[in-house]
Amino acid sequence: MHTVWKGAISFGLVHVPVKMFSATEDKDISMRYVHKECGSPLSYVRKCPVCEKEVEWEEISKGYEYEKGKFVLFEKEELEQITDQANKSIAILDFVDLTEIDPIYFQKTYYLAPDQAGGNAYQLLKEAMQQSGKIGIAKISIRSKSSLAAIRVLENCLAIETMFYPDEIRPVTQVPNLPENVTVNEKELGMAQMLIDQLSEPFNPEKYTDDYRARLLELIEHKVTGEEIKIAPAKQETNVIDLMAALQASIEASRPASVVTDPGKPKKAAKPKAKTAAAADDKQAAGAEGPKPKRRKTAKKNETVS
Image (tube, rainbow, N blue to C red; front, side, top):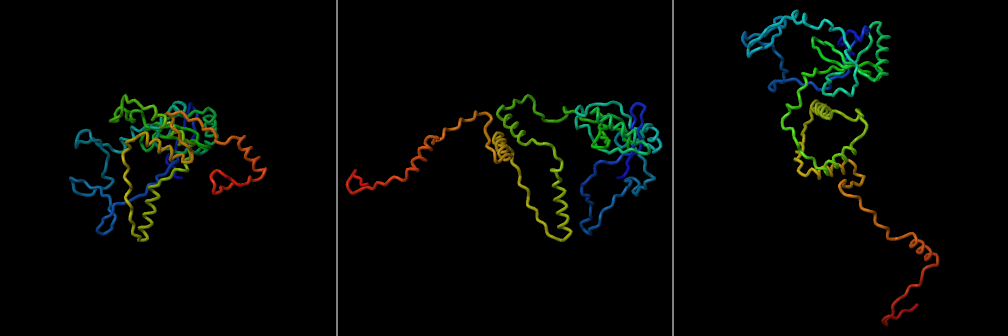
């Protein structure tokens, strides 16, 4: 793994030297823009529209547009001066319960490994956090970007999740067209809860795969070998009009072998069997005596011959 950051975790007066490694990787398939006419990949050119020439990296500085078309410029040294002086330290500010944090705050996960002679302190912090069941809330600066972070124990390793600051989370009130004061149909609610119960199971991440990436890789392989590919258009989904019918169909599809009942109706009592145990015993006894002689009809009405 590539080391993306080196520093130390500090809580109180204890310092734990650590190295940081990215815990996730981007599996997106990279595509380039290609000129259709000749098949050549297009290159990114840093060009000034005023000077009409390409600009080298040493001629570039960062700027902030405070008004349309007006910028204030910053040199690299100026930005470094205002960078957090403790940018090589992960300072734990508080210990909290993980359940108190909404997942909307989390950004990216990194693994933390002990650095230099910090093995004992690393193990001490990991064991103490594991026994307390708490996670640490800290501040960290990575590549001049300051963010909150949550430090937790993941299996036998310390992991750190970068987090958004509260003012970076957009309030729900900005979401348009949210329904208000809508009365939920109790029968539909019962069906929805039944469907949730039937689809509920322990979380198993191994069952989830990136189907789009798999199909794209297959498509790439076919194109490399020169095969002509024709993809059938996807079936357009229609808007659900009858919500109850959709819920009922979903329940039946999720448990095809089970008998689905309407939660709004009481279960009907089972009908008594036509044949009782006593009747079955009589039939068995009659069979033991042997078959009775059949009667056949004669030409005369109502007269039988044995």
